[in-house]
Image 1 (cartoon, rainbow, N blue to C red):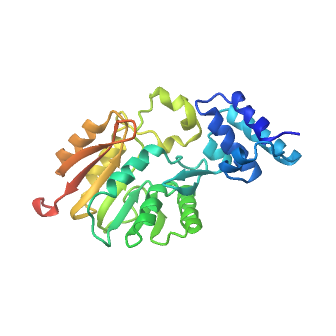
Image 2 (image 1 turned 45 degrees about the vertical axis):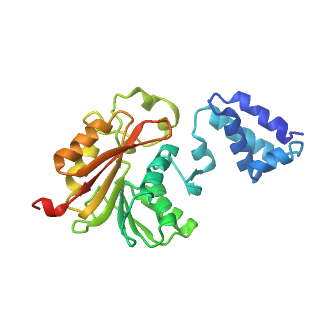
Image 3 (image 1 turned 90 degrees about the horizontal axis):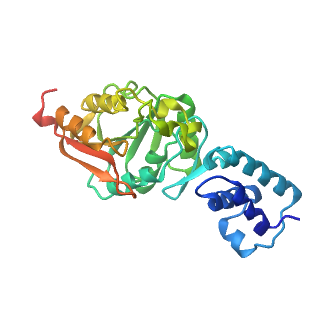
Length: 281
């Protein structure tokens, strides 16, 4: 008979920095309970089916498969976001961008564009916080768009729509009050691509040319045709790319350019304001 307490000892078999948490999340998934149950009923016994399933999950984690892929979900901004191998797993670092954005002033009926929406996590978090906003999420992957649509339906967030698009290709003549993007920004030679969860994520959502700056440059250059006057562009980027992204924003004509930090104190997103009346289109 395998008890909850004994099952959690399986954490020692997982080679990760969060072995105990991993084991708890996998056990909760296997038995269909919340984490508080594990501490309230440590001597409760698992059924044979639950124990077998839990052991299967542990073996998958030992091979390095991300927890989010194993259980099919990652919490982001307190929302349960369904995930799969078609797109990136939402990162806690991106929540810092959401926190900063919610301190800023935007129109009450803001029209927002999320480029490279993936699971829809950013769009859905903002749609949840700002129900009067109208939010469009674009992604080049049909599988990612289907996943984002499913997340919107499951969360009953009705002010977010998602469609397939190669960056701005599907919205040629639309303009927005706010454009936000977490594009590919990793250099193809970065050794981190061989480590951790990114080994199981699509390279197309991670890697960009020009030492990781190509897609950031493309978005900055093309965004000015899709921004209203006084609109804002916000870009997530690598921990060491803030200076280069700020320079690109300034060179393109953005003002009020700056960067924001993640929870680890790294500059992980940059922003600028587009004043259309000071530029010829």
